[in-house]
Image 1: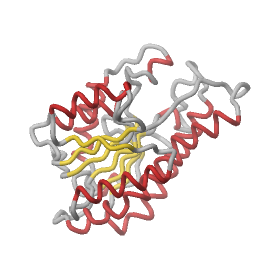
Image 2: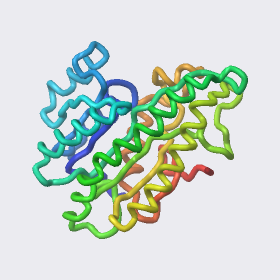
Image 3: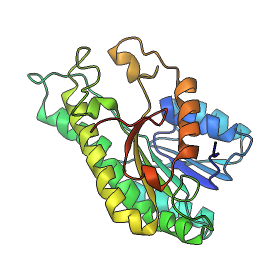
Image 4: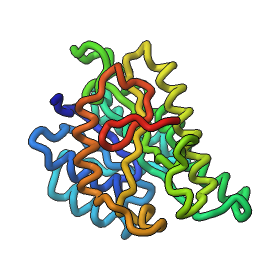
Length: 258
């Protein structure tokens, strides 16, 4: 099995849930990245305390303010990361930040739809655009052939709830704005994969499973712990290559129908 070995990783929404667990598992690996940029909206607030505690133990973790809903914040974060990397480029961008609101076809509101779409689709779009020069730099300077998450990659965290074929967990909640946003994120990933193929930047949309997080718990009793999900995800990321470019997969690397 191939092993994930990026020099640098950036994770949005890293102060809690899957983002925090991803940072934790990355830094505790036998071959941790030299740079782990853990971003969140409010690094000084109480909701980032667990992340701050983790960063205090591991110098590889750099906490950076990044509000995916604020283009100025995104640009400032990209400038900071560029300064720190000193020309090395960014190997792996993980667009993890996202929100969920419970709703049905009859109760969904324009306000919720706009807010969820802005965070779950527009956010990953502008973050990817801002960090594209660093991803291109990493790809161009890498001696590796083909594509991999250790070379240059965009990983968009999606959900099987966005599958137009499966409509995962429909019987639990209709989740209209969330489902629509994740379907749109899947399309964004496909478009990114078409556009960035020439740059050899791997683009993947990944469903982490129904996980025991604040978001996952809103629907009932998830079967997966964060540790189980992220351990499998990191194994999967190490195996991805150009053959997987532009695909929609789950935490174990299995294809999900669009």
